[in-house]
Length: 190
Image 1 (cartoon, one colour):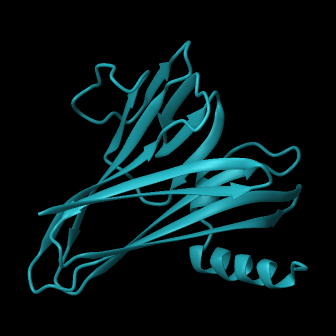
Image 2: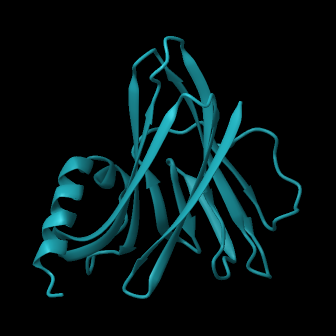
């Protein structure tokens, strides 16, 4: 068994969304993380979104079971971190929404703080030092030859006057978001 850990940081308009993930499993299993940023038009104006799509493939002839942890760790101070409805919130702002229901999350107020042993559907931690962190957990079971996609949206800026509604973001097509991001990148002057 091998543990693979990847960490990517998405930068857009001087804001950063930390996205880290780790996948435990057999060496034959492949994973690919794709990232993009785009302005997404809404009725109340443009929202700016960072989008991640993780593709996990089982090319073997055996069933593959694994756990996936998607981590939120501070690049700067995080004084309050919450988890509910398969989304992370930093100090009340939505920062990370999963399109697939997770097993829950484990949150901690510092790197070495005691943590619950089982994921929770709803959780909240605070830290005077700004060291909050958390992991969203997924259980994956892939049949031989099966590929599974998991999508994540990080709203870097909400449209003017809009409120965060995780269900709206989960209805977005990730293929269309990536196509739109490619189009916007091609239109930008170099």
